[in-house]
Image 1 (tube, rainbow, N blue to C red):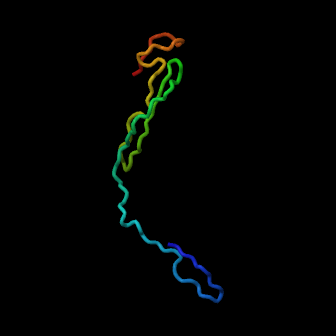
Image 2: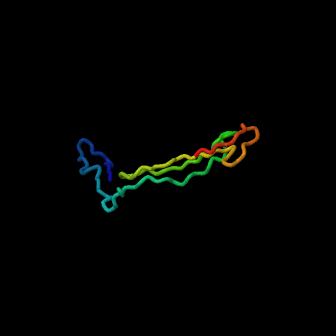
Image 3: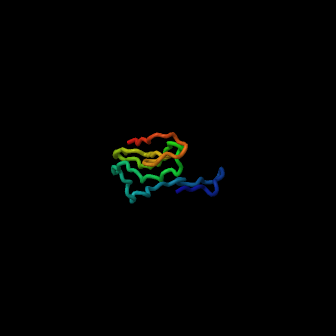
Length: 107
């Protein structure tokens, strides 16, 4: 709480008494935040980009977010971005006008 003098005393008056501010602990009944150890966690994968990056031999990507570990929890292990080829996609023939040749699957 805070308070201020409504009217200040002049040179012959009596000054106000008491504190201008008063503090009180008001959260003593609230529980303390949890300090449990929480491991990192991945969110679900987002959607694939709708467009291929190139007319010939392009890629499409998608990503996912993650939560940070707390209180000494384990870090995430895994990718946050994934990519696949497009134009041609796996098992597809290349679009007309693209270089000929056998597509190679990267593992």
